[in-house]
Length: 262
Ligand code: ADP
Ligand code: MG
Image (tube, rainbow, N blue to C red; front, side, top):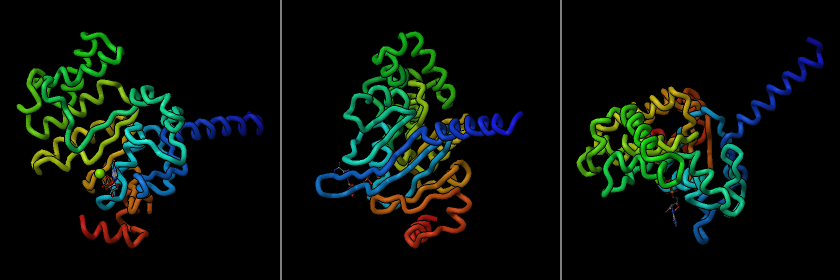
C-alpha cells in the first residue's frame, strides 16, 4: 500500500470513528424552567455501544438531561442529535427519535389496565411497526429475556416491583431501540429486587446496547460503565472511566458526593 493510500484508509477509519463518536451528541445545551437554569453548557458525546452512568445529587439535572435525549423535554439553547436525528429543530423528528430511544423510569409507568403482554405490544402495534402477531412474538421473546414469560397475562398490580420494572425494560426493547435510557430504575424497588433489575441491565450491556443510566448503584457503574459522569447544579462537573472516577475523583463536589453514597 502506498503512503497516500494508507493515509486514506486511516482517514476513512477516522471519519468512521467520528460518526460513531457522535451517536448521541449534546453541544452547548442550556435549559431553563422559567427563570431557573436547570442545564448549563452541557456537552456530551456518546458512541454507539457505550455505557454511561450519570450520578450526582438530587436536583442536579440528571433526569432533565436524559429526558432531553428523547425529547420529553426541550431545550432553549444548543443542539442535540441522536443517530443523526436533530432533536432541536422544532419537533419535526420526535417520532423518529422515539423509535430509536427506549426509556425506563423510576416508577415503571406501566399501564395498569393492560396485561403485561398488552403493555409490551401496544406501542409496536399502534405505531404501525408490527402487526399484532409479530408484536406478541417479540414481546414474548423479550419477556423471556427478562425471565418472566410466565407473567405475560397478568396485570402490573399482580407483579412485584422488580418484575414490573423488568416488564418496563421488555416493553421498551419491543420497539427495537438503539439506545436505552434509564432514570434511577432501581430507586423505587425493595432492596431484594434491585439485583434482578441490575442483572437485566448488565445483560443488555453485554449485548452491546448503548445505554445511559442515571443510577447511584455504584457497583453497577464500576462493572458496566465505560464512563461515569458526575453532575452538579446542572453541569457536567467531571467524567471518567470508573477506575479513575472512583479512584481519583478530581472535583471536591464529586468527592463529597462519593463520600456520602459509598
Ligand atoms: P435530578 O434528576 O438530578 O434530581 P431534575 O432534572 O429532576 O434533577 O431536576 C433538576 C431541577 O429542576 C430541580 O431543582 C427540580 O426541582 C427542577 N425541575 C425539574 N423539573 C421541573 C419542571 N418541570 N418545572 C420546574 N422545575 C423543574
Ligand atoms: Mg431524577
